[in-house]
Length: 114
Image 1: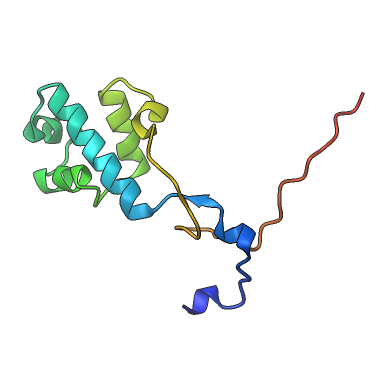
Image 2 (image 1 turned 135 degrees about the horizontal axis):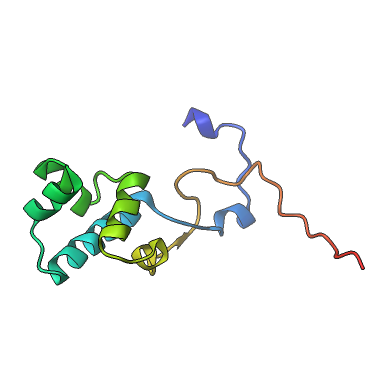
């Protein structure tokens, strides 16, 4: 992978926690589906409320299509916080999706002035 060329992966980099994109979206879609079913709502009711096509809503529940706007609308519809919606989605050890952190320096600690 050419975009990884020149990145130094160290033991420290490899042990960082990360979210796996496919796992994250799959678990989130399953959670959204469970919330809908717990309230006795159908997919058709959701599509009418959200203004989405049925296929779009089905993609949300299978974790194939979600935007930040959709996440906010879901949280508002089910009257839960984003923290509650995302709670418990597991992270893994190793190199993950997005930034690898290889070029980022550790956060600096600043001493409090008295």
